[in-house]
Length: 255
Image (cartoon, rainbow, N blue to C red):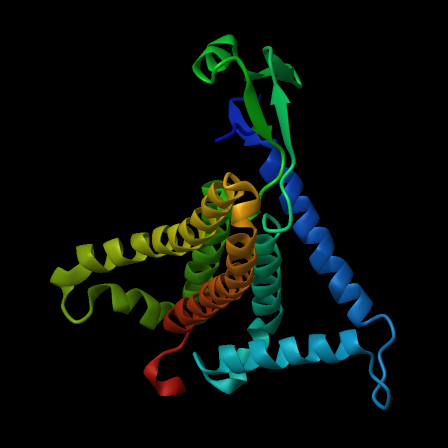
């Protein structure tokens, strides 16, 4: 096991490895999108343009399966951003890890990362991890979930206020506490599902690496499976977001 560089800024504990990987994820998604539209052509599209068009079609069909087609187009940009960012973030921790070993107390930006007590506990040396998937940090997945749920309630109040408020007392007013509890559980389940799957995968990779050469075949197999898990989790987060938006903004007369 290893520590992560956490610094204190104004009372907030910031994990530098998560911040670094989030910035890299954003850059990768931005560069992919920019390259895809850099030389658009109807007659001779590039491979990247074909790939991005396939992603757009896939996201559009996914959204259209949760709400009327007339509303689906409004959320393509949101769906594209979510699925690409989460997929890239899920995979960042797979290729490699940046870990430094320390044999004495270590501080970074004025904050103690490795303490004397930690060195004693770990037998005189401690490892600090500087790289991981952003989605292997609960703070990142919780942040995504909170933004999504805030957007869901905002759109519900803005586009479908009467029916949105009415659903809290359906089928009877006595169900109001349960319906509120259900809404509170949405960001919790969204964030924990994504975090638990990616974090568990990275823990397993760390365990396999301890096996040395013997673990190479297992590592290769798990890396391949992790690609599948990363894609599935990005899809699940995106489609659940669209389902929640549909439930808040669409009423029966729209179907």
